[in-house]
Image 1 (cartoon, rainbow, N blue to C red):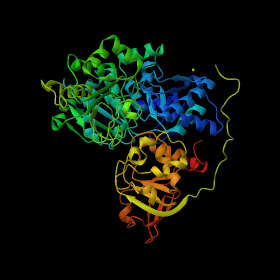
Image 2: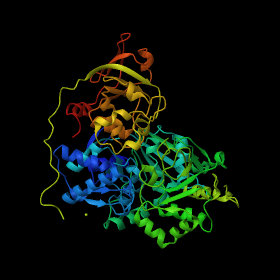
Image 3: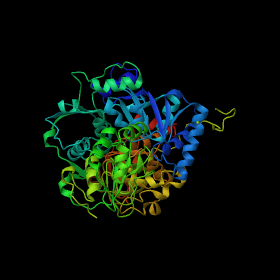
Image 4: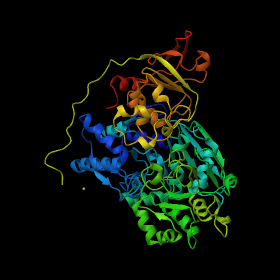
Length: 601
């Protein structure tokens, strides 16, 4: 077996697993963040559930560490009250990013399992751990049961050769991979990294690369731990750790060799992380603001790289530089090393640790038309504000902040362009819901043919609405950030069906991107493929999603607004406008069970 198969087999109490197997796996650490945490608690309470093991259950408040938004503040306090009553550890607004807390506080280790309401929980692959971002129902189930179902993915093995050029950072490495694989060529795969260039990578560098697996559609990027990684994790966990590695005869869907000598400093253009090119193509582009931080680039090595450039220099007039360390441990270390002073002397705003602008809840947001150079992992339109966001390495961002234009460290111009448990619980558990077997497995409706690939969750249900927890309120915002379909919610009718392209629901772990369709009464969604987290969220919410082959549209001469019938159990679609029928991928047994149960919980 390969690494992910070994982890899933061990945590599923199996001697062996293979791709496609569905395994109930034990979860070592079960985490909810501040915006998803309130919904996780509501799912627990509303379904009459209790915690399986409070010692393995955590809150991490990293999206809005300042509590600057009233709805975030209310959700955080709601979670704190539940934590106090149930003995849950809260890494509060002073702690930092939850996934990085997992590294620095020993919540995860090589071969362990970790789930969070953070779509970048797969960043734990940096230490050879299985991390996954999941929706509110998944996390609630993990809290209540201690385990979750998971389908064993196929794996890809990447073997790197050559020597990484001196001017190519870990962020550049990730952007070069995005240039090779795009947003969906690794969709649904677990990817293992090998080769001498990989063996030499530090923990911080591995974290940066692992952080961007989600942007390439990957389940996880797994780095086989070297002794340095084991030493770090043993120090953080306080125990000896078992070594984990792939068998010599491990099975892979594909093995690909990549020469790192060809890698160059890169950036991603606004709108898509995979729309990238060499920095040279955008040199001289005026910027309004710059951001250094996020789960991708908020570690010590990232801050040191930025400080080396900013020392003795000033941020260009009119440019706003925001620096946000990933955890408070790193913040304190940066202060001890004098980095915070360097940042402040250069004119930067330094905030307390957290996700920052990437989560739309702290510093890092930009305004309409504002051009930002960011070290984040996503730059979807509207993701970090109303402006335009380029992605680049900390060194390039720092250099550009000084220059006032996009540039590289070696070409900075001389002059810048202008916490006692109560006696009575306040959480009244509702009655557990009974199974609902009345939902039809055959639906009919008018079809919306939306011929677009990689429709991400920000396009489906924008992050500015993430504080909404009432499903009835969600429908009105469906697709209002998808160009050409901003009026979808007003025109959609109950029983309508949506048919779209590849990688539907890419991006975040937000459940709202599924629930908004249920609120509108949409019958089902058909797509060529789905983002991994989105697929789980829809199945767990008993919302029908199915996949089809690209030839379907021509096979049944399908046109926008045709009336169609979908048989989800038989795997058949009929165009009622002309009587033509074709096969689609039918519901799996797990999907039917959850669907008839009315949902995972």
